[in-house]
Structure formats: C-alpha cells, structure tokens
Image 1 (cartoon, helix red, strand yellow):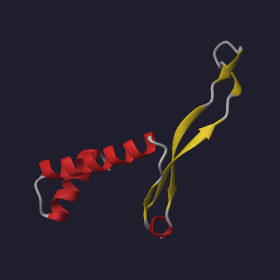
Image 2: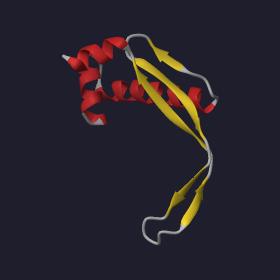
Image 3: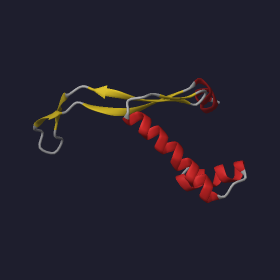
Amino acid sequence: MSRDELIKKIAADAGISQKVAGQALASVLEGITQALKKGDKVSLVGFGSFSVAKRKARKGINPKTREPLKIPARKVPVFKAGKKLKDAVKK
C-alpha cells in the first residue's frame, strides 16, 4: 500500500477529505520522527512500538575492491510488531 492509498483509506474510513487525511498522516509520522529523534519510545498498543537502537562500530569489506573498511557506530530506528498485528498477519 502506498502513501496515497493509505490517505484515501483514512479519508474514506473517517469520512473526511483526502487533504485532511494527508495532514493527519503527516502529523502522526512527524510526531513519531520527533519522538525518536529525542530518544523516546513510541508505543501503539496492539500495533507495535518504535524505538532507537545503537549499532556498534564494526569492520566491513568493500565488495567492489575487497578492501577492509570501518563502519562507524550509529543509531537506527527499530519497529517491533505488537501481538495483534502479528496475529493478523499470521492468519
């Protein structure tokens, strides 16, 4: 499902215009992004939770030149699906 398809579904389900649905979706995504930037965890009960994980620095190999390189440590967003979402997908 694309972003536009999701906006159309939100608009149809809520009985609102696509413009308002698009603004609502943008607001939700921006809220999640800002919370993760601050290092907070976002939990949507039944759906899942978003958090930030730290990856350690590690050694890698350039596949083209086969030369070793250092991959720096960094933070990455992580999503863990909730029970209801897992059960819905499993069926």
